[in-house]
Amino acid sequence: MTFLEAKAELKEIARGEYHSVRYEVTEYASGGEEVDCYVYIHDYGSEQGGTWREALDKMRKKCGLEPRVSTDPGEAPAEELHRPWKHAGEEAV
Image (cartoon, rainbow, N blue to C red; front, side, top):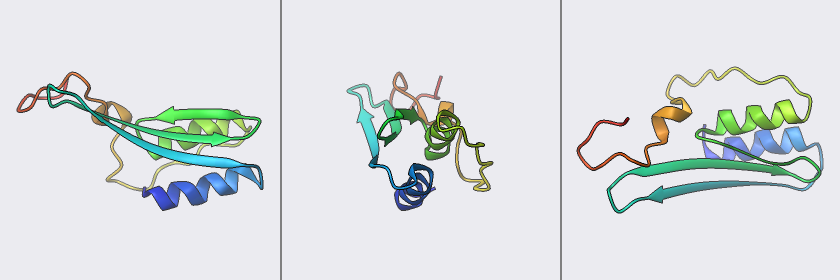
């Protein structure tokens, strides 16, 4: 899922309320990397996930909506993207 797709879905969930999306990549000195996707809706707060789908589904649940099933075979699960302790050349833990 792209940033713009996530933004469009959050807009749909927010139903006119103030909302925002944020994508954060943290790179460690060891060469490890952590990816976080954040979504926020006024009066509901924020949710974070390792993928847009994870963050959006958490927000959907918070808003009383059913989560969507990802149809994107390329969207890796969060644990595949969170690698803060992975050193360059090592396998993810």
